[in-house]
Amino acid sequence: MLTPDQLHGYIAQGLRCDHLEVDGDGHHFEALIVSAEFAGLSRIRRHQRVYAALGERMREEIHALSMRTLTPEEWQQLG
Image 1 (cartoon, rainbow, N blue to C red):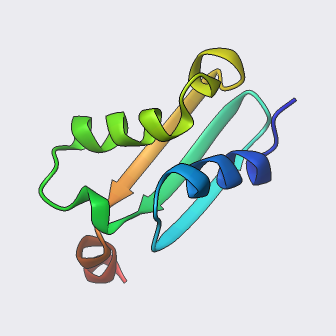
Image 2: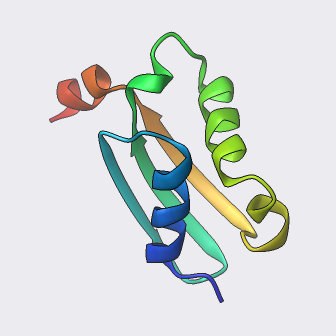
């Protein structure tokens, strides 16, 4: 069963993150992903970028992933 720490590592490997939090129970996960790579992208494009970083794991290991994707500027405004 996949752990939140493993998922954290997979995302961090494939996407340069300024901040990353992952929580979950092994089947359903929630992630807060802050990356400069999201600048100028729609929410759908941001999610596609994360899916690309995870590759086949999205089909094989990860059953459900809820994401909040922000740029560093958006994250700072929430702070």
